[in-house]
Image 1 (cartoon, rainbow, N blue to C red):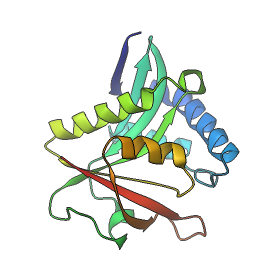
Image 2: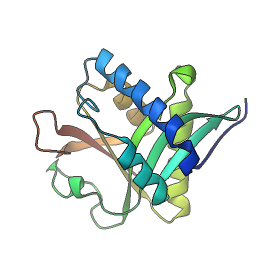
Image 3: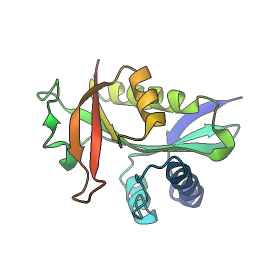
Amino acid sequence: MLIYMRMAEKEDLNRIMTIIDEAKVLLKKDGNPQWQNGTPNREMLAEDINLKRAYCLVANKEIAGVAVLLTSPDPNYAEIAGAWANNKEQYATIHRIAISSKFRGQHLSQFMMSNLISRGLMLGIHNFRIDTHAVNKRMQGLIKGLGFEYRGIVQVDQTENGARNAYELNL
């Protein structure tokens, strides 16, 4: 199976949204309130595509996953109940990671994360951050397995479910 990453394009948006919607269903089934408030939505992903920060994972010529690599400061990470290990260098944030239900269980999320980290390194970034809900054990397993370390709690919004476990990887 040929697997690679590429920049997302406008024509990919419908397929990306299908994958995001499948992920929302899985999160809800897991009892996770993350992504249950209407985001990420079509407008957010369209902006990610326009700003050239959305990536597609392609497997056998089919979009199998999506993720965003944000290389500008994330306002949600300005305050943390805890501490970042590296507050001096530029960091990249990984967001909106989802794998198509058709491709789940094939460890493609590890491949996608590795490629996002490699992309950041090619841009000269050695500090990576990510957050997830405390009940999102799937994502926690993935990011801990890649060497990300827990740093504390960030707020992605001011709702009851806006608290997220924050992780950091320094290379």
